[in-house]
Image 1 (cartoon, rainbow, N blue to C red):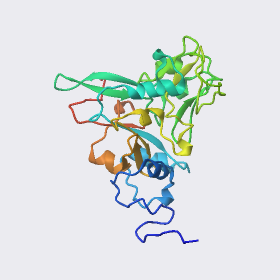
Image 2: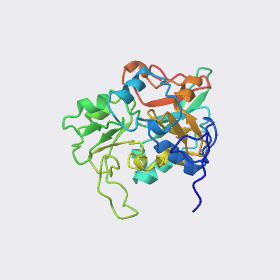
Image 3: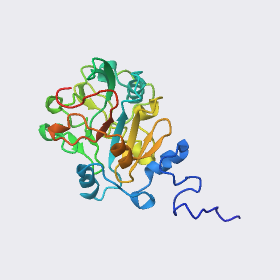
Length: 276
């Protein structure tokens, strides 16, 4: 048996076909493998874009610290992310967990703004629930236990991003055998609240969230603050901290102090602060 091919410029644990150019386009297979690596296996210096991000990665010994990056420069408003989410979670139209809004810009025009759950580090929705149905994982995902939810809708009132949706009716009939509901992969149920979960059940396996995979324009990235890597649905891999810093990324309604883990890249006169 021939010994495995090695390259002196590739660190141990990385495939030989993964080049060290931090801005290169990787194959889909290597993209997913790279996203799943821990910080110890990545030969990239961690440069935190936010003090809050550094706190998130050091306060607990979490293997990952998930976030999302949305490049508004690339969004054409096709809403395929919305359709992918709806299909994956078997949602009715009014229950879509990522919507694309037409927003006014500073020059009298409009731009398209996808808006998932912001996965706040200080989520007001979590503290107000009377039965503790909301939870936040060590990896930064804000989830809902639909089995515990009593449908008080207090979390909906508390969310400043309008990212929670009440199930007024039963979900559509499932197209496959029904699965047990978990916070990572909730099953919509009448009388409960649903929301985006970043397809939390996929992330441990190196799979992309449905909205990210479904975007043909490379608008959406799933990122990891620990490995300092973000990946789009078209296979673009970036150094997360550099991508945010070099493109002056912002967070929606950041002044509210919720410390959202969704970053937006602007470029067309957008303004995401205040009551926008």
